Length: 95
Image 1 (cartoon, rainbow, N blue to C red):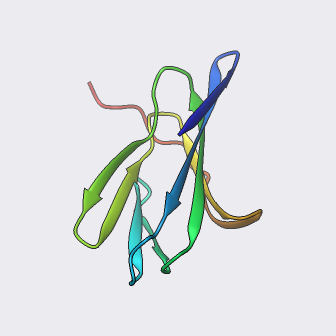
Image 2 (cartoon, rainbow, N blue to C red):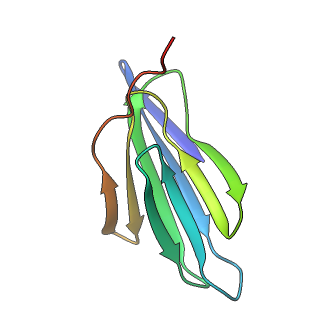
């Protein structure tokens, strides 16, 4: 995972490779999006948002869940091609 910062924002990039012989699901939360990754493919998950937090990855039944942090947006790319974009920022955590 790589992270770069610029002022009050940061970009976090994570490469997710499917080394299994079957497809796996990637769940993007809290957006409720799901993407299936075929065997041997690698996708880049790029998140942009306020500094001070990062992506969280959880292994779940049949794949992985990737959670954005408050104020972040996420894009998934294969090579240079945009596959999925979650452009609505994650809402603040309720107090």
